[in-house]
Length: 334
Image (tube, rainbow, N blue to C red; front, side, top):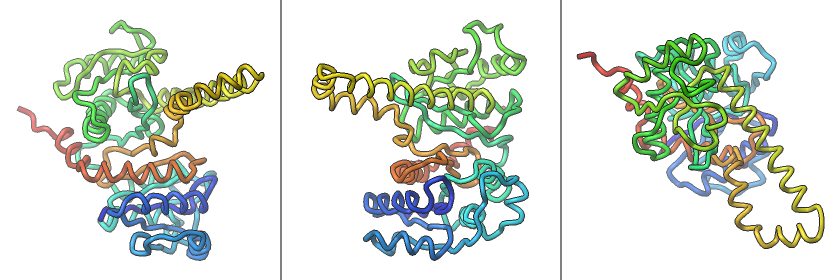
């Protein structure tokens, strides 16, 4: 059994959507056990709405909740009985293989590093979500954990991202690119200029050079490397444009009778295309480089994203990603 700790109190739709996602996951997979961390009475009340195998869902009482506006470090230190801290300790103690939360991003990032701890040799754990492209998906690394990164950090991001894309997503020899304002090697800010030659000479990755933001959706690279400030801007713009684009398509297809008839003819194909732009299809963003798996999902996560995040953790565990990252980062020098 793969054991997954789930923050039942984190996010805008907790605990309802979180618990619904957990139940859907255990209905789909019989090889997982969910450890729901949260206020006992709230969790019991929600679970009364469902039928499920009780052996697959365990309740962990965590009466405190870390709110989004709280200072992450102080919250982690003071609220020992919070759902986030309890869940992270389950991973640290080896009782769970992964922890998932839609709660405070800062608390999850800080707690992941301080409680679960980094793999030896990892300088900074990056947050790495999958984003849709014409070719499927790409890994955006980092998108929120390290705003002020150094060149050595970005090189490690590229290595960890390559491991993830090859063994979790299944892309052989994934193409790695660094976000830049042009394709030429001499372009970019100081960080990009210093990092580019390090990536270029790194024997462990398939580095293809710079990538401009407009080429990311085209799928020109599988691993998109940047520091968290740039990555977060790309991610938020990606999500905003996607929502706006889908909204405009729906409005245009409902604008008149002729458009509605056309919409009926392309309904199935359109649904498939629109699904590829749905962030909930890809699960959460793993915080790579820790001694256990920590996954941050959107604060607005619904049951669908929670379920997909749980399934995502199964592949991570089965492929032994942490051991592969450890091996990649700590290659002995010749």
